[in-house]
Image (tube, rainbow, N blue to C red; front, side):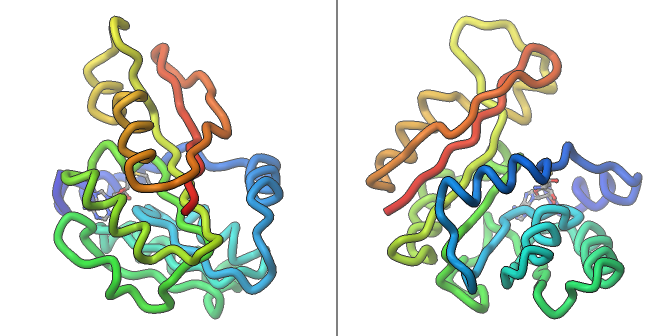
Length: 197
Ligand SMILES: C[S@@+](CC[C@H](N)C(=O)[O-])C[C@H]1O[C@@H](n2cnc3c(N)ncnc32)[C@H](O)[C@@H]1O
């Protein structure tokens, strides 16, 4: 799924389920995110998570392949008066080196509803590790599939195998936990993984 695919989606005013304020507070408390932490959201779309984090005072960067999504994100940041705490970068994670992103390393890296679309997942995770601070956390939010369950074609496209994902995360990070597992529509499941060095 290339830039044109995503630009086409975002030009139709499509958007995705947002993280609730209460869940974000629970997550930040759990990882004990300190003041002045730097945050990166990979595949930030129209910037909801980046802006919510900036409104809490964190310097937050969002990157995405879609310039249309990023334009919307920048406008929202302006409306919410957090433009000085946000930075939105057009970036293709399948082609560019994450180490070139300004402000690296990050104390928190998030990636929500994007993992299924990443071509080389093992390399992606290794690259994440390289731009995470020593005590940093990687929060991966993704729909997952269980073996021997019938899923819709749509769900299969946006999901990843749960066990394979856990195995991949465990190969790169020394601590991996499942912070939350919740049902989503069409009999799917969404997991919030938290990984650290
Ligand atoms: C399902 S949307 C989720 C957007 C956002 N994380 C959210 O939860 O609202 C997937 C996002 O990943 C971005 N994306 C897909 N492939 C990408 C790539 N190779 N590099 C950077 N961003 C990518 C898309 O443009 C899109 O914004």
